[in-house]
Image (cartoon, rainbow, N blue to C red; front, side):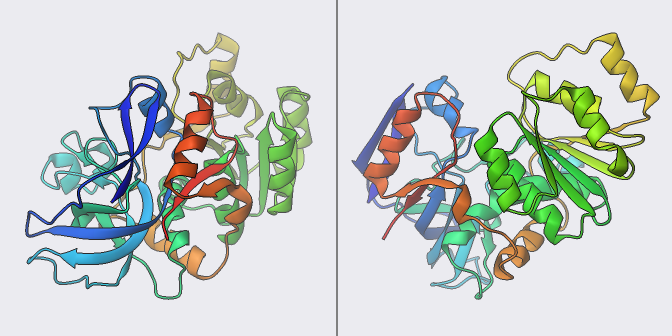
Amino acid sequence: MKSVVIHAEGSVRVEERPLPFIQAADDVLVRVICSGLCGSDIPRIFAKGAHYYPITLGHEFSGYVEACGTDVADLKVGDGVACVPLLPCFSCPECEKGYYSLCKHYQFVGSRSEGGNAEYVVVKRANLFRLPETMTIEDGAFIEPITVGLHAFHLASGCEGKNVIIVGAGTIGLLAMQCALALGASSVTAIDINDEKLALASRLGATRVFNSRSLSADDIFSALSESRFDQLVLETAGTPQTVTLAIDIAGPRAQLALVGTLHHDLHLPAAIFGKILRKELTLLGSWMNYSAPWPGEEWEMAARLLADKKLQLAPLVAHSGDSESFAQAVQALNGSPMQGKIMLRFA
């Protein structure tokens, strides 16, 4: 089978690998149809972030069940499935409370074990979400990134009737923005420094957009004055500057969900910290995308939104191709962020 393999830092190759096989009773062999590159994969490839070499990455994938272990009774050959990459221990105190994202004894498909950037992969039954028959198999590869924003909404007790503000109009932000619109948000605002991303946000239904490179935080805060109450702010960019901006622009008693992962230290000036207190903000740390019952309502909601054609995915894709094309597109990043989703598709 063809597999996109990372052999060392910055080395992306397409190789012929042996077909994996079922070894345990709860194993499932999946024929992969579509797999997406996640932003978290970039440091795994280019910044010595892989747990081991060689490794096949890929945790945002969908495909068809090819074979099942003897203990798997609720899936059959030909079922469409999407990867649920986290495998918590299910027995620690956090897992017993349903806080699966907080498990300290977890495994992770495409990071700590072989992933879906290959024609076939074997994963545990718990790592698969069965897709509705009305949903296209390719769309299933987007379920995992969709659930990232939905988990923040879950922690915030929903977004219906709220003025949602997305800071960072990348893939995660634009998916969260579309979900908020579909789930009844009163308004949805997108903020970024890239005019092309903001234009796309407008086309996808944003109520308003702001470029934070050309507008100050005070300008944006003033422009949001009519929707300053009942705000839910999602910070999805994961930079110190955007965290500060999110605090700056938030309205009175806003909820602020921190979704983006920081790779540099955050230093809050006293005046910015004071705004958390003086505006009585609620800060929510949002980590991964799981809740009880496993894998969580986020996954059911993502599948429902996709099956009902509530989300537009094609405008978010910058590149889609076979294994060789995918490997070349990934290699060309050279460690820089994606400017749109890079997708691997097998025939």
